[in-house]
Image (cartoon, rainbow, N blue to C red; front, top):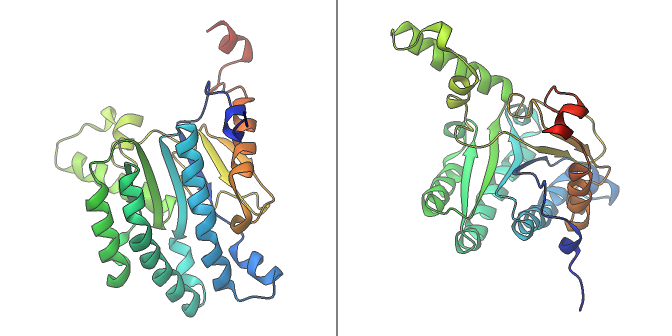
Length: 250
């Protein structure tokens, strides 16, 4: 009997939450003498592959960095194309996500998105809101520093109103005011295209995440590359500030 590639991954110690910085679309297109937009179009195949791989392995949370607050500084035509591609992709993929029991979530300032992008996105969120098999989180118009400032402002308002004692502020309260409230912190962060930066992505949530950097450009990133990241992850010892000896005795 043919053995599935996922059969080689032991279910023990799999990450609960994987986040991906999907990098390299523009370079992928440039390498082939094409416009950057072709890279973004072909990236959809890699998104589908990542979702399917998480489903095959039983990883319940996947976050994809789709568009940052800084990406508005890109050429206007590219930004416009990305917004149209996003809305088109949501409309074409939402039925399958819903059938698979995947809940769609978005983190970021979605109110600033064009209506043509925001409206189908909101419909997709409503359609999948009760799904519980897995959660796909799209970071859209997202910046982690802005998220942290937003959380700080919300907490400050509670203190000012007399509803919260500053001495009571802890990790749990802070996390309740992040976009990712009720979502487990990231276990594994993957970045493609050979870049070794975090790029203002989930700075709080990756405090103890394992980092994996792949040289593969995102449009070429497929299941075998994802599984290489998973294999690397499960071979690591996560200490959370403790010694290796402490972890072994526990």
